[in-house]
Image 1 (cartoon, each protein chain N blue to C red):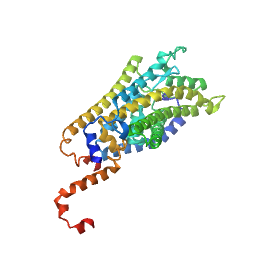
Image 2: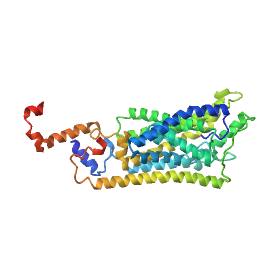
Image 3: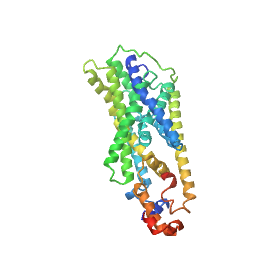
Image 4: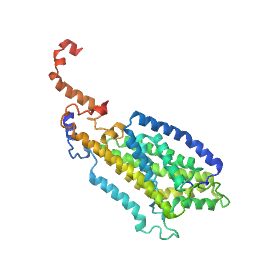
Length: 138
Length: 262
C-alpha cells in the first residue's frame, strides 16, 4: 500500500492536503493577497492623515521619545557613514532588498531545476526501491 | 527596531554587546558546522539570510500611522534552528549600521540581541509549540500554522525587546522603567502587530514555495514531516516491498529454511 501512495506522489499527482501533500497554489496566492491587503490597508483608510508627518519611521519616533524623556541626553557616537540624501539612502535600501530577493530567486530556481532533472531521470526506472529515496535514507 | 547610533549609554551598550557576543560566536560556529555537515544546506542558508535582508529593508505602513519593517528572522530559525540566525541577522544589522546609518556600531550588540537572538528563539519556541498542538492537522496546514506563529512571534518579540532596552536606558521621570516601556512599546510593538501578521503570511508563502520545489531539502531538515508512509513507516513500507521481492532473489531462495528463520 505504501508503494502505491509513494508512486502517486512521485508521479506528480495533484495531491490535496489530507495526507500532507503539496501546497495548493490558490491558497498561496490568497496568503500573498492577504499580506498585501494588510500592508495597504493603513494607506487606504488614511491612518496617518491626522498626523503632521504621516507614516514616519518607528525608529525615528523612538529617537524623539528618548529626547522627550531625557532632553539632556547627547548621543555619544555618530554613524561612520551617513547617506548624503534620502534618495541615496533609498537606493541603498533598494540594493539591500534586491540582493536578498536575487538570492531567494536563485535558490528557488536551482531547487526547481534540480527537482525537474531528478524527476525526469530516475522516475522511469527505480520506482520499486526508489520509493524510499536513497539520499534521504543515507 | 534599530536603536540609533549612540542612543544607548556606553555602559549599557557594552553590556548588550557582551550579552549578544556569545550567541553570535556560537551562531557562526553553528553556521560553519551546518555547511560542513551538509554542503547542500548552503543554498537554503543563503536564502534564509537573504530573506532577512529583504524583509528588513522594507518599510511597511501600519494602522498606527507610522511605519516600520519586518525582521525576517523567523524563516531561518525554523529551517536551521535559532543559533544560525544569530550569525545571519548580525550580517544584516551590520550592513544597515555601516551603509544605511540604521542602527549603529555602538548599539549593534543591543540590536543583535533583540533581532538575532531573542527574535529567532521566541519564534522557534512558538513554532515548536504550534507544531505540537497542530500535529493532527494535515501537514501543510500544521506547517503553515507553525511557520506563521514563528515569524509573527519573532517579529513582535524583537520589537518588544527593543522597547525594553530603551526603557532600561531611559526610564520615564514619572513612570520609571515601566512607564518608559509603555511609551516605547506603543511606538514599536503596537505598530508591529499588523506588520508581524504580514511577515507571518509572507514567510508562510516562502515555506510553501520551498516545500513545493525543495521538498527533499525540507524533509532532510526535518521541517517538513514526511507522511508516515514516507518517514517512520518508510522502513516498514520498504520491508513490505522487500518481502514481496524476496522470492525473486536467488540468495534468499537458496538459504535453508532453518537459517532464514534464525
